[in-house]
Length: 173
Image (cartoon, rainbow, N blue to C red; front, side, top):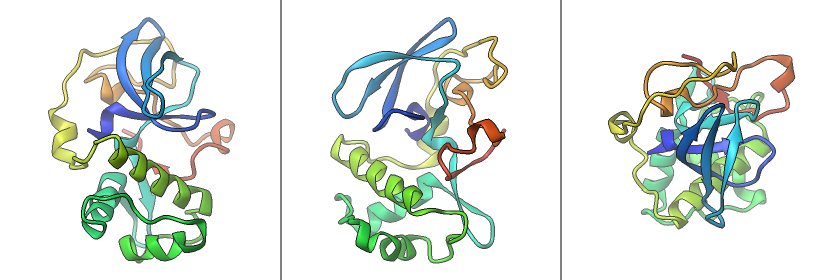
């Protein structure tokens, strides 16, 4: 499920992948339901490709959401900026405090609460693997081609150009 949910740099909220066209994908805002194109030059990241840095390595975002879901019995997390780090320690006790910033923590809880509010509650990796849609192609070098459409959503790279993007770690590959 998280493979079809996207974050687009510069746009607030989350977006659901709807369709594709040449050099763009059509997305729908989870906040207001409006549809619009996201182009190959936009920094689009699938939530299924995001991981959180820990002292020992990294934890996939779906694992964080699953733990949040268990702790909150399927309800929204009681998030406030003042208690954000305390809440994250309950979920990921060993998160890397040097590389995971407060803005990243805010995104984790904001995204989780938005997904729960909109009825997206299956955060398992298995659900991501079962999703199938046609492969997409593009001439943009930042877009990986081949495989399923969800796997081909623009992969955020770690170049200096995108250093200001989400600090949450996204695995390449």
